[in-house]
Image 1 (cartoon, rainbow, N blue to C red):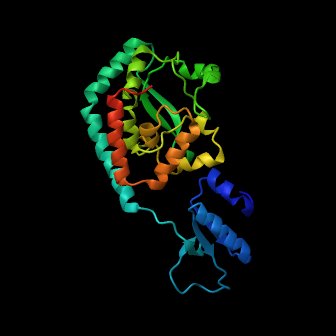
Image 2: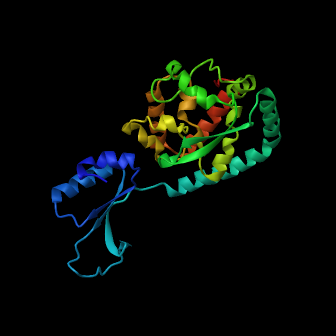
Length: 275
């Protein structure tokens, strides 16, 4: 994939979780790789030279090669399982509860402009894996084709595209966006495990392809329907400000933090501050 001097960049662009040192004989190189891996929060394993002997204690094996662990990142497994369980129960309950509203919104979207009521677009998920993100359609049917023509009117700093008074938005779409009702179909993505209720918002693939390497850590976690940026700096045009908040969320994450974000999101939605 590249040289050890490029480890930091390779690990980020390749979304690497683990580094394996194969029979290292250079002590300084081993220590340097270990230091970089720890800084990047990667697991590190080593294939020791056993001089033709078999290990007397149980070790992990990959392809018959024994490995010993030099560094293991600690994951909050119990909290992550609880987060997923909450996502499943809450999204399933919400889908059942809001089923009549879904049907009504779908009819209104259909009557307001030609095209399907649902819009499914590719977004960058965890580790950059693309997935189809569902929304109620709030724009004209050929909105993606018109996007490139409007790039020069982008009001966001950075790769994300956003503009006020977007001519592609329909009348019903403007109302749905104001109260974030267009996002409700993403409960299906949450149920499928492609999204979480809380996390960094998933960006379109063309925005993702424009990321700088320092932006990639936001993809270390599953994207969410709402996040820290949405409740603290929703109207801030700076892409970097949103990125900093996403990284802060990842570093400080807890179940309690998710619950606080959900409660504050509900207050923001009721005020109709969406765009």
